Image 1 (tube, rainbow, N blue to C red):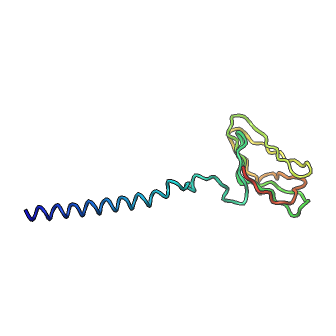
Image 2: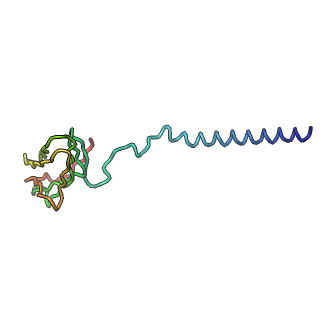
Image 3: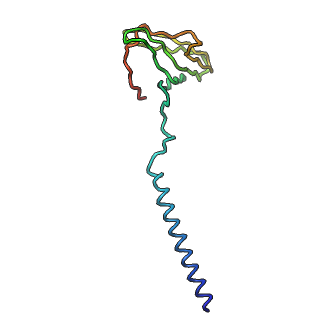
Length: 131
């Protein structure tokens, strides 16, 4: 009888320890339930901005200029997900515009290896972008 009583006590202690560990784990993992995962937040981890304009996807877009009222070069990437060619028109300060043709199901990179997309006046200010 004595051995059986010891086994019951040990089983009871093990059950209580398992319950305590389970409650502890649930309380720790419960923090993730109320806090949003950072990987679900979209943001631009670069100098440029991103936006989706219908079938055109803009990535790492920025305008580089030497002075506030000098011409500025548009840098970045434009992706066209549609089955027809598209043209992106960027309007700058003072009514200046740059047009960027993008072929269907293709991308256009605006960098040192492509024809520059120039705005005659850049405006000279860093504008925060919150789509």
